[in-house]
Image (cartoon, rainbow, N blue to C red; front, side):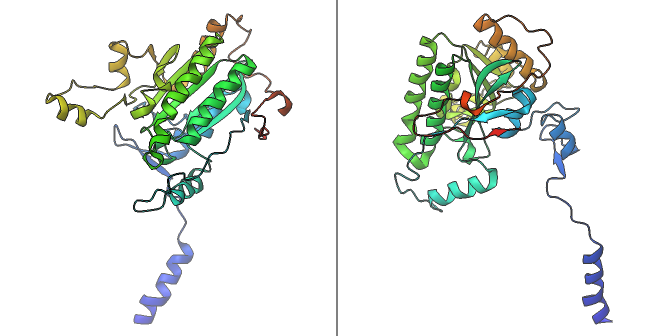
Length: 313
């Protein structure tokens, strides 16, 4: 009997058991409802019913913006991998390796060049899943290179911010990216080109003290947490209770910190319209429909020492 229950029965169960993916269902942080992952993915990672905006990866974000879901990756300069030889519970280089394996990204920011309703744009996306979207040397170089390319191509620059702040493992070298990116934004401004920032959940720390709050137009996604220091830190400092909804996108809009709060489903047409208005470009007939993508990698000019990556389709 023991042989039947301890050996045969588990083997039969293993034969009949179906493998269930870990991410088959998603629990909405707002309502608590369980939603089928593929339904959320097809809905641009917005929970149906509650309209809660989940975090969106860099590749999925770029697909949602560019015509025909096609763009060219912008080649980014290499940086010193671990300048401070930093180690806490784990070596910094090991943390970066783990983040790269988990997200399939080189660092927290991915930059793409392509068409948005027929107009060429440069888009930088910060991925919170890569070490909290922290701003380090590689991320700073990505922003600067994206802005340089926008100037070269005379194109608008759009950045999707999502970050917990500066990357502590890089110390002062990380903090230095704040003034560097600010100077690069000024370079775009002097070229009289649009700079549009989309603040997603969460955007905090040093990012909000630099490029994330310098847009010609500041857009936020619904419910996004936006601020420099955390609410608890502020309450402990000023010894007062903060208002309800403090540091949320809607609160910031009411107090003039952002220009508009836009649902993710409306972001693409909104960005296209803003780019046309700010560049004084005529509206295209049927502009809401995807147009032909960039046709040749030769159209992308990257840093002199690097070559552009292959297109995505």
